[in-house]
Length: 243
Ligand SMILES: Nc1ncnc2c1ncn2[C@@H]1O[C@H](COP(=O)(O)OP(=O)(O)OP(=O)(O)O)[C@@H](O)[C@H]1O
Ligand SMILES: [Mg+2]
Image (cartoon, rainbow, N blue to C red):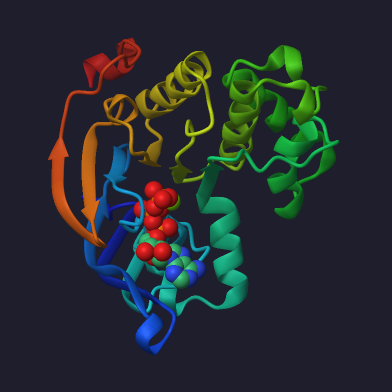
């Protein structure tokens, strides 16, 4: 068996000091295998974003271990951590976080520019990513010329363009209407079927229903971890049906 895409052990995160100290994560153990689609659920304040920020190497735990593809994140220096963050993890946030007055195409090219990839290849990979999320006809639009769902699909394309091992999404449909939510979830379903590993945070059952596995956090602890048959997934491709 190959190493899990991510593996955390006794993960603890505390914010603040003394009387103001908050224990946001209280010893989380979690393995996510390649190709899994995990929904992390829990009430507001239960530690979902804290966990996601650590999984995405945007924040460091107070204690505990975190391995990505078997590599111990705590032992990497700043440079190697930045490389890992750029190449191995893609993020989608509730608020899209696109750069205004830059085209969809330029937004999607950005992670490749940071990765030092040349102009022509940047362009072709960004176009392919935008096509994949159904936005081939919107590549020159700026964020304010796109609907919320379209903006979030640009954000998904930006997260995918580096071909990361792991896609992390924190309430990606939290600001979207029903139709846009459906569009974004369809893209995630397709990515899951094509073998991408996804960890999605949500407090909506309808959204979590798309995942293969649901984890529930209460006060910084995992209290439930179950597998389910995802709803509304696209039909498996012939090659996968045979596997
Ligand atoms: N930077 C911070 N400084 C101090 N406390 C924090 C900080 N970030 C989060 N917390 C606290 O840690 C706990 C977990 O917060 P977190 O943002 O992970 O919750 P969440 O499950 O994502 O909630 P929501 O559904 O509202 O987004 C909360 O009690 C929160 O107040
Ligand atoms: Mg949150």
